[in-house]
Image 1 (tube, rainbow, N blue to C red):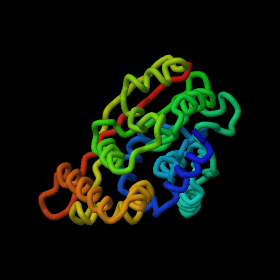
Image 2 (image 1 turned 180 degrees about the vertical axis):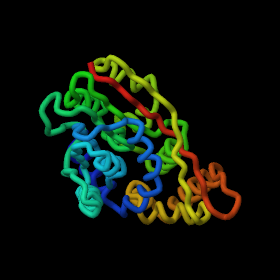
Image 3 (image 1 turned 120 degrees about the vertical axis):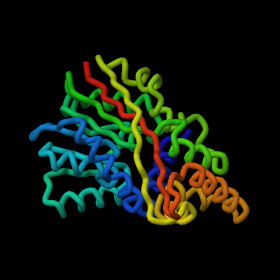
Length: 267
């Protein structure tokens, strides 16, 4: 497998569309995620695969010294712009979750929310998250679960556009047993809690699907790989999933998406 070519395709996928439009629907829950970390002013925080800054921004608001890294340059720019607009002290740069350019034991808290879980080699991700954490420090992750809505959305897409062979499914990071296997070698304590993100959209499910096709890079790229018949089939399956999970009854869309919150304390 050409891992370099695979990573280029993954980077291009996340840079397609405009992930910031999609990410804002999770902002409220990510603020709650950060608040549970009880960050103190001056805490050294690394946000791995920080995206457009949903956890980086509230961490910086708390007074932490935050560095964010992400593989996609346009997401780095959005996160940096958000921090600048609020006058927050935060450094954001391009970086790879599998090869973090920081010395050992650099950070008090290492965060990754719906980010590092998508890197193709989880063994390297685990090693790096542990390596850059200080002894007694915290690794905090939010990972979509295999059986939750987002896990099913990716699995549905994968039936039409199969993922690369030999790459573990990203949602395995949302399985507590797998997390304990991956981080247990360097963590003295691991706490896992299942939580929910409420996705509220002021329009019906089919319009939400149209939003994802336009702005969510992985969905946009998946559709681009299919002919007209294939696109229609994928749209039908994703539309059915959105309708199945929709709890709203007033013409809008409310989806409750499960994720696994991980707090691992470094040895």
